[in-house]
Image 1 (cartoon, rainbow, N blue to C red):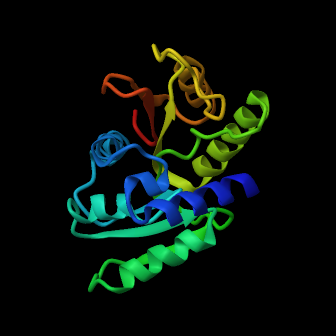
Image 2 (image 1 turned 90 degrees about the horizontal axis):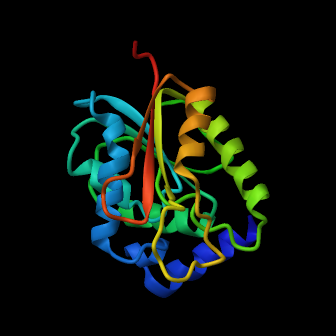
Image 3 (image 1 turned 30 degrees about the vertical axis):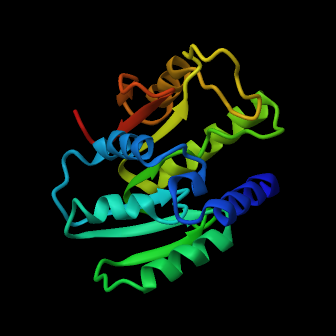
Length: 207
């Protein structure tokens, strides 16, 4: 993961607390992705706990803060420098919501877990190795998410003329099937929001 940490630190140093600083191409696409993964919270009005796995500078926390009055937030990132930056930014605000920021090896139990943009960059890793990492991460997340979890990935249904070899283009049908077989009978695949990615929602305790 050293390549991931180095890349994330470099992006943040170059672009600061912006969508570009965490690898997105702009605010509008970041907001669309947040709207998709936050659909996992459709049954919640307030008083829930959530893991933000790959929290970056805290943009998803801001997204939630604008929409919910009462929630417990855990933010995780592989980069300790980025977590330090998040803490500094939040410390300047008068916010009463409980917040904890930790490294990705310290996952807490929460009602929900959300991952946005975590699996897109595979760097130099072989595709089979990267897929194994994704499945292992999903298994970890499933165990600590009592009500459900959501994540997005770059789709292999793309009409881009050239593919970036550093990116991982996932098969949405495979990912959907994996989640149905391993995690819950209640899985949704969202692939209709005009970006080159898809979102998976895994809901638990529904009949």
